[in-house]
Image (tube, rainbow, N blue to C red; front, side, top):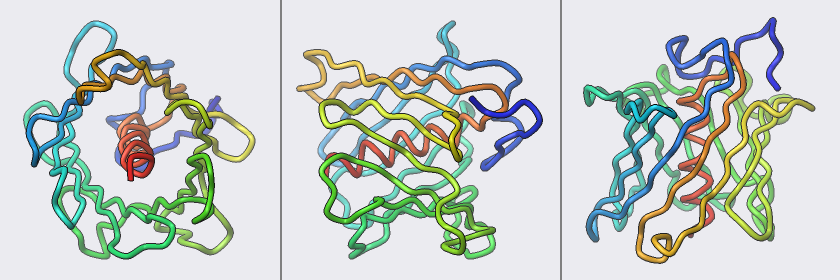
Length: 193
């Protein structure tokens, strides 16, 4: 769990709440060129949306608020050995809006593990966060040091075979749930390639 005295804010304060947050993420392939993620709280309120192309060469996902305004953009770095993604504020790709970088822990790994480097300490002292997956499912945990700050459970259904999938996110208090959603999308996209 996240420490009570320290808020883990990557995207913004508005995405950090003082209680454990349960979210449902639904992924749907809408066409050959578009995939969409919708994020809901336990009462069914829409919190965030993720849009992006399936077949484009520049993999890009934009996380938007319910009004459709861009919150952050996830961009896959071309020709990256460790399948690196970069996260930016809004729809920017400028250096001054760079938030963090996410990449596989090892280029030749069997299960999907990711390292997250914040812009403030990019590649200096090792990763700021670590994402550990499993061999058998797309469920994973997000770690900061020795503490779990979020858990993601993949719900396999027959719809999963037809482009419809869902995930349950458990985000601990004072942890940025937009950041955890970004890691969920990147983990899924990295695992599928």
